[in-house]
Image (cartoon, rainbow, N blue to C red; front, side, top):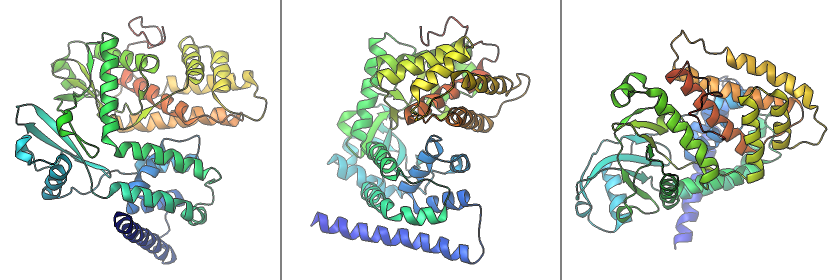
Length: 423
């Protein structure tokens, strides 16, 4: 019976998808013709969860997609209308199999956040702890699976809409997305990620960083109840000063913790944007949202480590050599020419943010993505293609570079002995 129900839901979902694509086509015929990357991004947003995630995948994958698409999909919004509180309560009750008031003393009916896969509410346990509840939206997994299967069929439609896109590796891309997104749908995996990272902090005697505690008795595959953190974003300098006498040291703690995870934890946090790093009221750094993590092979990490070490001492030949080892190529790459191109790009990066001007986070996000794409483009112009883990790692490094400009503009990242980084 369940298979029949899922089949009906799947057919309905394909109908919805075709309807959105049909509307897009009609608008195109009527003359509503934005640039192709924008048209594709708007269509993806209308199609919902899977396509929004696909858009975000495009945004973070300059190794797979042309620059104009990567840039346009930076604007892919993962904001969806809040589900009614009654629906949220029903999901919690069904998932936990007990009356809500046996577990939670209160739940705030107004959501803290709502995205395509989940909605988050503040709450208090009957035992008194302040928590947040991450609730998976109904039907999300079925929609994702139907959509991902449909993507194979729709690749020709997408090629027609966007002839510049190369879909030669579509199956590999869909596999990657499916793996990532189905992991995001399994809150047991996210809970496990939190526990593994907590153990990593304990084993490295790191008392300056923390992650939310998971309350297992009120968590499941579709519900995640976690300790609620109180604090401010890492980039909110004025507020940080209330909790920390030394914002520079706070930033160094965050960076040292993340760099240590690359070699001493089984994964790294793959999305350290400002919203996922908090300065807590007691001055500790809180890492939140472990839905997206990255894993890197030891040999790739060794090459990346050499790449960072080369950046530290301004050794562009070393940077070029490491990039050649990280990348995949079918032709001979001239290391000296690659080094010269990297040196030119590095000079642009160095002068990008004057220390005497205010620095906006929106600008920071744009700069991070632009530098990332430029570095990848330099490598690709020499015939290199990079694994996605490299782009993910590089993006996190560049986030931290931006935070240095905001919190510690006088600090020399590559010379500061407090940064353990790769030592």
